[in-house]
Every structure is written in structure tokens, then in C-alpha cells.
Length: 389
Image (cartoon, rainbow, N blue to C red; front, side, top):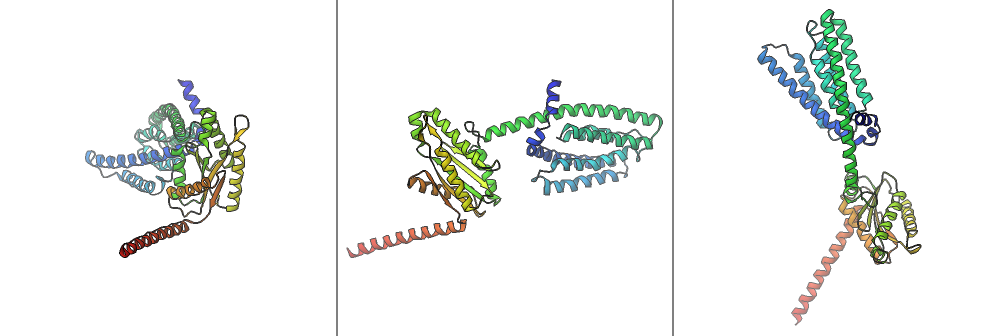
């Protein structure tokens, strides 16, 4: 068991590989920490007033105000933008720890320290970070408290605090080792599960669920780019003639060619069957994309079935999005119409358009108007013919 624990602790690459997941975890932990801090502070004020009948609780009121302000800032700025949540979690804890050190030393020089011991055990548990960073964090708290405690207290009282500080520190480090190991393992399993659920098992690229969500985010955030809908020509012939095993090989080869033609930041997904979709954020130059599509067509023709027979060809409909397309459905429908046009006119090629969405709407409006006029004219002619009879 210990071997597994230390194996997970040494795997610090997960903090780089799964940085987004770690940030999400720390953002949630920050929200819980601040909420609990506010509740505990308010309860402490009430209990001190009711049980001790004292009004000397300005420190607790100050902490309650601090937690309330931090919680407001968290919901306003951090909850939805979690990329720096780990550093914010450290920063949120440090002022409280300093107050705890002051309360355990200067404020009660003749009393044994208690609050800082509790903080030393509980605070690091909220943080998911590299073991080295958490160890440095713990040692800094221990040394800081030990320094101020030695300046204020002497004799048996000092020895009591230092003894309990060492025992608490050992317990805190020991418990943090096991808690951190379990969390790292959970992050890895969670990320692996998410990766499996978002990727096509045959081709390894995004499946419809994983890829469509990412494309929707880009379009909703008005991130311009190129949307490509690709369909393998006569794929049924491949399956019927050479079998489904060869069909699977063709799908894998097509996805490999698509992945190598685009950047790792681009979304390449298998829509289902023999249809693929690509969204390349930032690629909006017409001539560059035209050349890229020609290159893809040439690469696909290099894929063959049965030792060189039956070269694979593809048809594509591509739309350059200047950021004006309002939804995934809008750009998909336009690319689908272009793909249908290509299929209708011989296959093995592509159609590319770079008109903004406003022009598409105008074109559709003109079509609808022309259709409505045709229907009215037909109705008028029918009415006139009926009248003549």
C-alpha cells in the first residue's frame, strides 16, 4: 500500500498533464473553504457572546468579514475562471494562518496555543498541489509559529506548544500524504474516464460528444476558424467488397491523415459512420485553406484497399467562420449543403465558401421570398384559370 502511495506522490507530471482538472478541483475547494470559514467565524462570534458573555471578539468579526469579501470575489471572478485557483487557495489561507499565529502567541501569551494547531491539520487538506509545494507550505507555517511562540513564551508553556507543534506537524504531514495520494489517483482516473468518453475507440480522435462540445464553445465565444465536413465517397462499396475489417482500416487511415494535416489544438472528430468534422480556430485565410483542402484530397487518394486497388476519395464542404455564425447548427447546415453540392457534382473534391453569416441569411431570405412569389403566382394562375372556366 505504501508503495502505491509513494508512486502516486512521485507522479508530479499529472499536475502538468491534467492542469485544468487540478485547477477545477482547487476552485471547488476554495469555494468550500471560504464558505466553511464564514460559517465557523459567525458561529464562533455567536457562541462567544452567548456562552462567555464577552464582547472581545473583534478578531472573529474581522475573519467573518474577510471570508465574506473573499467569497464574494470568488463567485464574481474565480468560480468560472479557474486557471489560477491553486494560487488563490494559498493566498486565501495565508492571512487566516497569520491571524491564527498571532492569536496563539501575542494575544494569549500565558495560554497554550490551540487555533494554529487546528489550522495546521485542516488547511493543507483543501489544497491539491505538488507534494513538494505543500511540504514547503507546512514547514513555513511551523517555523513561523515556532519563531513567534519562542519570542513570546518561555519555560514549560513554550515546551508544551513546541511539543504539540511537532506532534501536529507529523500528523498533518502523514495524513496529507495519504489524502494527496488518493486525490492524485482520482484525478488520473477521472481524466482517463473523460478521455475515453470523449474519444472514438476505433480512430482515437474525438467522438461526436467530445468534439461537438469543443466546437460549440469556439463558435459561442465567436472564435473564428474553418469548419470542414468530410465524407468518404462510396464507403458502402468498401465494406461490401472488402469487409468491415478493411472498412475500419480505411476509417483509421482517414482519421490519421486528418490529424496529421491539422494542429493539435484543432478539433478533429468522427461524426459517425464515415463522416468527419474538423474545426480549426484561427484559420481564416481563404487561399491557405483552399491549399490545405487540396492537400487533404491528395493525401486521401493515397489510401487504398486490397494492395493498391480502389483508391479512397473524399468529398468536403468547408465554411470559413469570421466569428459571425451564431451556432454550431448554423455552420453545420451550411457545410452540409456544400458537401451535398460536391456529392451531386461528381464527388472527390470540396466546396469552400467564406461569406459572413449575414449574407447567408440574406440568401436564404431571397430564396424564401422567391419561393413565396412562385407560390403566389401559381395560386393566381390557378385562380385565373378557374375563373375563365
